Every structure is written in structure tokens, then in C-alpha cells.
Image (spheres, rainbow, N blue to C red):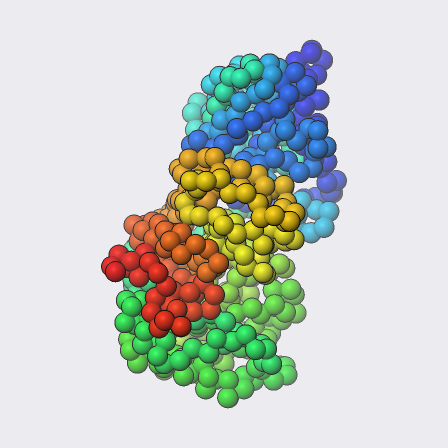
Length: 562
């Protein structure tokens, strides 16, 4: 092995965490691409890493020895199967030497000790300010790629399904099958790395049906559910707990008067059922829900009723599917005669064992159950990982049902929207407040005295203090990323998408909260994406119950009027 290849192999082995040995990794469509950078001893530290084109996250790896961390970055950015997505990053080496670039895929376990095989395609890798040892992929074939060290990664000719970004070859990698090359860098000379990636189609991938019409029943429903508010922390609160907000008819009328067109109503039906197999919902609880539903419909507000916080189901979907379906059979029958302003959302934020792949067939069963009594009712369905936008490519809804509205949630940037929230984050990170939107602040934020913050949050605060607004982690860049991914998927598959939750906790600076809501709302409206804020008056307030008026700046932020 020549010296360059030896250096390359050594750096790649150092940077990539130990692969999990598995007999057969489950295959999954990748929602993100990943590459790692690590400097040799001569280059030393690499600094100032930031994304200059595109959207993603650049972080220090947490699996390396502490003395190696300053010389390494790991970069993740969203990809899909629809088209190539470009990304550019910049960094500056402290010394003259070599920096390894390792192309791979995301690290995600399907179960303890077993990784998903999520393959990523790569093309158009270029560098400014450094010599890229490995050039393009046009001369490569299989694992033989001039200038690249293959640890299972390959180069292939484009196919009829997937064209190369340029030329007719591209690379194919995943977490346990990488390609690595070297960037020869000079001390103090900034390096800008450009590349493109997309998700590889897994074998047996079933393409969802594409809908060409924009005048389906779901599209017409989406036009009625444009600007909403969540009545959170009320009907989903378990019996015997005392944190319910207890919304009134006055709240409903105020929602209407402010200019909202619908209410999203979280409901904990599963707390109020009898034993199986019927799981009969208590009539008294139906009356409580009826009161909210009918109050909204009486003032011509839309109302979206869901199942909220069904943690038994999300922990063990197979075991609790009979209860889930029984609940929906009863809800559907009970409300079959209500007007079209009432819509059903199957489940709030599937998580844990309720992965997108796990709930797809269960949700299809629920749709069939509802259609027995509500053939024309709009049904709202969202993917796993807390209705994560990144999970949209994994979502499957019944192809023949055109009255399904797809929902996602987004609270990015989380360090801003959930600062000071006692239930969010780990350790002292949840106690850190003082972040303004958008960054950077006029005066650098210092971590609160006495707090022991995670290295990740310390690095985020450093970027928040120093990076320009357009690339700041507490800025509208994350909103642009979220909305572009929603729109890309929605436009391609012809399914309208609705943002069922976004919001910022009231511990944030009031002017910054208004800035956050304004910037997100503007982007959603421009992309023709309906939304509902979290929440009306339960900690992420639009409405201040003490002043009986909107929180400062909120009306202007969401409706453009004082």
C-alpha cells in the first residue's frame, strides 16, 4: 500500500465508529446522507466548520477520543429518492496535511445491535482550497475506484430508474460500506467541499401512487384547514391528573374572532374505555368531546379530532391494535352524521416501536374501519418519529383513497422552541434559556452559571453566537429546510401535507417568539401548507388568559395585522 493509501485507510478506520456485525441488516430507504471528516496529525485541528449551501447539521463526533475531536466533523443532511440534493461546507485546517473524507450513510438501529441498511448515492464531489485525491467516479467500477479507499462502498453505472447528477456513474455507500479519499490541505487556507447525494432505492421498494390532480377531496379539505390552534393539555390528560387547561366556549369564540379557521383537538380516548374486546368508550367522555366538537362547528370552525398520547400502542403496536381499531370504530360511528368540518386524525406522533413501517398497515386497517361509516370523511395520517418530516418517504397510505391529508410536526430549532421546558432535553440542557430568534445575538450568550451543559449544546451555542443569520442554528435556515422537504414530497406524490404542530414555549423572549412564528408562518403560507400552532393557552400560548388577549406580537406574526 502506498503512503497515501495507508494514510487514507488509517484515517478512515479512526473516524468511522465500529460497525455492528449482523447476518442480515434490514433495508430501509435513507432519509439522510452522512459523511465524516478527520484530520491527520500534520493537519491537526480543523475549525470553523459550517454549511454554506443547502441544509443539514455539522457536528463534532462524540465517539472519538477527546484529543481527536478537534480534528473531526460529522455531517448529516436530508436526502430523498426523488432527486439529487447538493450540500457545501467550509472549514479551515490549523496545519498542513491530510483530511480524510468518508462517504457513508446514516447510523440508525432497527433493534439493539442491528443497523438499518440505508444506502446513499453520491456524485459531483469537488473541493476548493484543497487538493482532492479522489476525483469523480467516471473511471470507477465496483469497489475499484481511483483515488478512493473502498470499505464496501462501490461505484456503478446509472440506471433507468436513477440517473447520475453528471456523467453516467455514481458512488453507492451505507454506514457499514464506505468510500474514503483525502483532502490535501494547507494551514490556514479555508476549504470548501461540494457534493451531491440522494437515497438509493432499496430492493423491492414499493413506489406510492402519484396523484396528479390538485382538486381531490383531500386538497379541498386542506384549503379549509389553513390556520389552526391546538387545544392542548385538556382532553388528553389522564384521569386523576391535575394539569388540564379546561378550554371553554369562550376560547372557541376567541379562536374564531382572531382569524383561525380550525381547532386541532387532542383526545385521550384510550383512558376512558372498558375492557376488550369491545373497549367501549364511556358515554360521559363522549359528551365532553361532543361539547368541544359542536362548539367549534357552531361557529363554522373546522375541528380535527385525534387519539393523543396512546403510549401503550406506541410501545407495543401489535398488542394494542385491537383497542386502536375499536376506538376508531366507535368514534367513526358516533360522529358519522357530523358535517365535513370534522376530520379524524388517526394518531398523534407515532414513536418508539410505532415506526412508520410498523403503523403503515395498521393505519390502512383503521382507514377501512372508518370508511364503513364515513365514506367521505377526511382522514389525517402522519409518519413515525413523532410525525417527523424526515419520515415522509417511508409513509404509505392507501393508494385508492384520495381523501387523506398527511400530517407532520416541526419544533426546529428545538434549542430555541423548548428552552426552559422542564420535560425537554436531558440534564442541565433543559435549563438553559436566553436564546433569541434569530441568531446571532448582539451580545454572546454565556451558559448559565452552575449548569453542566452537554458538548453538543455548548457547540450549538458557539455557532449561535458567531454564525450569520442565514446559517445560524437558531435561524430561519431550519424552517427553509423543513418547508422545502414538505413541499418536495407533497408536489411529487400529489398528497397535501399539513403541519399539525409548531410552536415556542413562553420562557423564550416575547419578541423572539413573535419572530419565530412570523418567519415559519410566512414560509408555510408561501408553500401552500396549512398549519396549527401548539398551542392556544397551555404553555406555548397564543392567547394570554390573564390579559384575555393575544400574547405580544402574536396576532401580527400569524395574521399580519396588529
